[in-house]
Image (cartoon, rainbow, N blue to C red):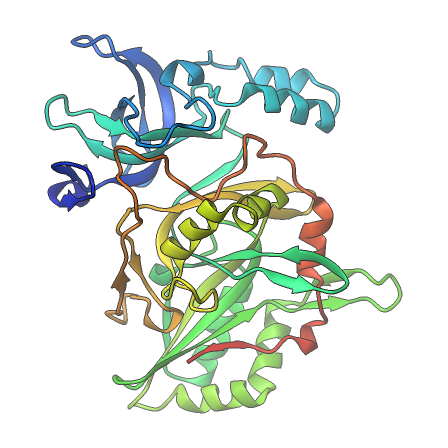
Length: 400
């Protein structure tokens, strides 16, 4: 089990509880504990690959729940029960409406999110504070179990809907470059999606350090507009790398690549759009906005001070784009990293650890999530976010 289980967490509740985690479990079967008769979920943790048995501990929160909590019995579904029905329905609208009524049900092969879980010392089972269905059957959604994620600030525009995105980076795929040719190759690989596990829009994070000062520049693969069709398409990775390296910023970074006193890294990056319901859930709910600020903000009241944390993320495809519908740090005491300070195989990194408030045993969690309607997206929002402005008008995002 996770190393976090060796840590004792001090909370506002009486006594202490083990450190709690949030993680995704792919369902193998539903069962009952022989000793207690407790209904259980047997599945595989997607982040560690180990088989676990999960039960839901009693809710003893001080605040009354606004809606009944989904119990283990509510998730039970037979193999093929939902997926076969989805295949038989003739339209996407019908499938969407049927899924609305399924709420928690998740068949074997689907994925359930365990929130505020820890290993019960007496039974060896995972004691969960909350359970949520992420993928009701194997192909319903993509669940990335361990991604360095940042939830970006909401962008408001006068001529269109507000948009918000999440950014994922892949530190293990970082490339240390020592020449302009190596820099070009690393940028082409990142723009081409090498290392990208979640889909969305490819990009690159360039990190520069002299051992004392670190700086980061985030780049997205540009999209170009066809003047005749007015449709947007991705620029080729090679052309995108050449365009950046021809810019003042690019020329300066290329000159740094061979400097023995500097370290230049290229880290693959991906940008995903929030679904409309997900966005509304934290824009309009004070509790959920507070949870986002606690989990992904270095400074709680400053939305620009965003940070990366190891997280799970649930992704749905909408038309030609992808949106994420749920995300949460893997730990309730996540290590947060500014873009310039993320640890990689070439860099030790520097983090800040913040605690997500609330007793892991008593209060309901507040992840980014849809309100039981994880397919109610607006494909126009995906397009609008992708084509909000001409690529040439988009400056690189430098975090100082």
